[in-house]
Image (tube, rainbow, N blue to C red; front, side, top):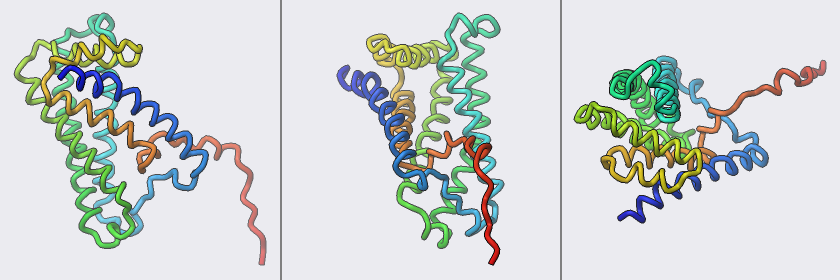
Length: 225
């Protein structure tokens, strides 16, 4: 089934990234008023601040950990930490912040599904993206259990090699590195790539919104009656 490995982990990442860039660009240019998170806090604010903060703190730390862990070359982090210790650090920190994120995400999803007012103003994509994030988060937490069975860091090296090879356009090295890893890791990677694919079509676009133009905008003109 190596051809599936080539498609899902060699070709699919580039398709997803191209869709991410072009889709976001087109949406921002053609539908700027849809570029928002669409907050529903004013409909029901009970517990919203706590759950939202838990989710956002957790997911930001998890994403930062993935970014640094996957894209930092081995010879650089070996200056301060070994491969095995890096895996242990990733498991502990990822587990803590993953659980924090999970609590917030589950409560936000429950709120969106069970609160009548919030549900009425939710689009299908709002619900689907939360479900997709939940699946991805559960897979990520499951990888911690799988990783505990091999604490030498070898699988972490393979996953990092895959990510770095994708970034540097080394197709063959990428698909070869990830081919032998456990299916749980592969599913986690697949759904992670899928999040990039659906990004331009969901509320996730607010992640890259930096309203710098506010600094140079004109004063608002208010006319007297």
